Image 1 (cartoon, rainbow, N blue to C red):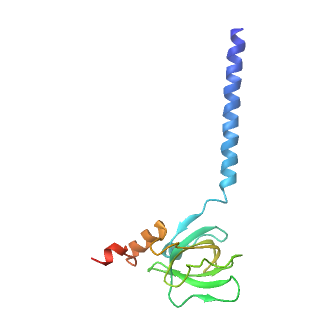
Image 2: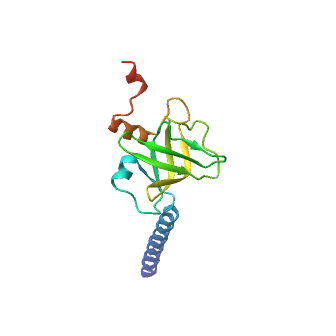
Image 3: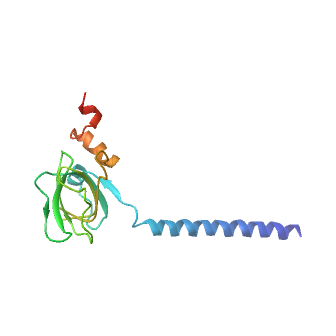
Amino acid sequence: MRGLKKKRRVQVIVLAGVALAVSAGLIGYGMRDGINFFRTPSEVAETPPPPGEVFRIGGLVLEGTLVSDQGPDITFTVTDGGAEIPVRYIGSTAPPDLFGEGQGTVATGTFQDGLFMATELLARHDETYMPAEVIDALEQQGVYRHAEDEGA
């Protein structure tokens, strides 16, 4: 009787371990396309990612580069002060209302032949918001200063 309880306990532990391993594998498999790394234009210019890799690029929309055709397709250049990367947005929806020249943006897509092909475009949602990664990258380049620092 005692050996049977011990055998059952080992079976339950092994079964739980297998279930945990399968769960972890399924979670990893499901998230493989959902994880997007953030890069600045300077990082993309230094070490271009392999074709087909989906990532996010962020910075400021360079003044005078925004070209909007009829429909949702637009082209512009994103910069962090150290490098400029041309972007073509080919999304299924129009760009956000707050998207414009001189504004902070984050685009998701792939880098092909020196052009970032964006499928998703994000813009700041009020007068003071910009993604933390974009602010950090722009501050490192010396392009961006916080609003409270400008009054001093």
